[in-house]
Length: 273
Image (tube, rainbow, N blue to C red; front, side, top):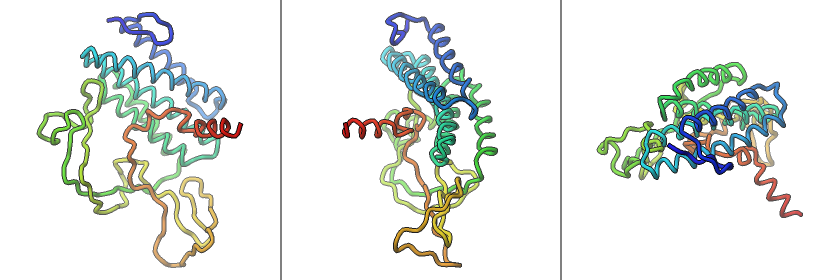
């Protein structure tokens, strides 16, 4: 099977394409350390952006050719590339003293590793990377208080065939022709928010809470003074800023520029010029 080598105009066999993507990932993995130079890490992030775009193009070609194995293979490459980029971004953001954004990238990398193992049997080794990310969570970041939102849905829909989930045969989390099956909740109504030890999404957590001096961030432990008119009641109920639901199921597909807000800053610079 011939695959287009994006950017070179050549044709690669499937095995050559696999070697090409593995080499790109392995090159970036060398920089997965806080000791690495930030400029070099950022350069690897941009390389991962391009590599992920190439994987997506090959996946789309495979879908058009009705080749489910190759489509799922490059779905897994999208995930694995996203995992490495997210971890690189985590270290960059920590060095920029942006722990909340760094936490989101850590969880993004964890989600990506888990999705890679689901996408194709050739990526079972990503479970080892997932364990390393879990170790980073436990050693680098302070313990977090996680939340889980409960809600009632009027209908559950399959993302693959758009039929009522449970009647179509597709299973949530399994890959089908380069796409994961997801359950779409229709007509939802909120029911409750609970503090849990093992959340479905670790991005859902208590971000900060009120103290007598201001809002204390649970990651940095920094205090933001109260705005005019804000008050704190000693011995009163806990007031906290929280994230109880995240709508981005695939955060590891977000480009480096969007994560680092460089697209916005570049636009502002262009407008001011």
